[in-house]
Image (cartoon, rainbow, N blue to C red; front, side, top):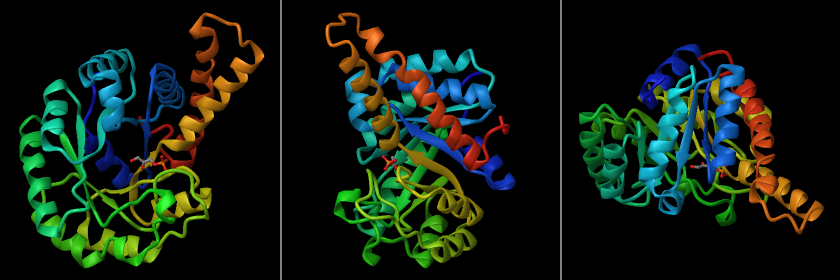
Length: 282
Ligand code: 13P
C-alpha cells in the first residue's frame, strides 16, 4: 500500500492503547529487516532517517526506495524524518514524499519553538504530511540519563505548547536519552500521565534502546503511542557483521557479510512489535 501518515497510525494506537515502533535505519539490510518484521507480525511501522543518514543516502533516494518497498506490503508504513532543526530540510522531505517530519526546536526558547514548529506544520499539513514537535529536551545518554529536571517536559508548558502548535505528535522528555545508557533510566510516569491529560496529543518516547521492558509497557499505559529505537538495531547489525567478517576475513562479496543482518534485525523488531502491542494491528 502507499506510505501512510504518522497521524493516521498514531490516532488508532492512541484509541486502542498500544505504541507503534519507530526505528532508525542506516542501510538496506536494517530497513528491509524492519519491514519484514512488520509484514510478518502484521504491525504498522515507522521507519526514520536522521539528518546524517539522509545526507549519506541522499533523501531523494531514500524516499523513492522506501515508497517502492511499502507499495508491495499490506501493512501501514510511515516514512519519517527524525530530529531536524532546519526548516528547509524538512520542506525538502515533504516535497520528496516523506509522510511525517520532526521539527526539533527543543533547545530554543519556548516562543521560538512554537514559531518554528508551526512554520513546519503549516507547510507539511498543506501536503497532508504529519508533524512531530519536541518540548523539553531529550539529551544524549552520555550527557546523563536524561534525568536533569531542567530538561524534562513540564506538563503546563506542554498544555500551552499544544494550544499554540498544530503538531500531530509530541516528543516528551520524561527521563530517557539517546544512545546506550550508562545507568538505567528512571522514567517519570506521573509526569507522563499529567502531560497526556493536559494535551490529549499522541506522545512520543525517544531513546528506546536500553529501556527496561516493564517500563515500555507502563509508558504505553501512561499514554505513549510512538517509541523510537535506534542504537539497539545498529549494535545488533554490527555484532552480526563483525561475526561474519571474523569467520571469513577474505570474503570479497559484501553481500555475504551483510545480508544475514536483515534476519537479525527482523527478530529484534518483531520482539518490539509484540511488546509494544502493535503486532496484529495493521
Ligand atoms: P536510541 O538510539 O537511544 O534508541 O534513540 C532513538 C531515538 O530516540 C531517535 O530519535
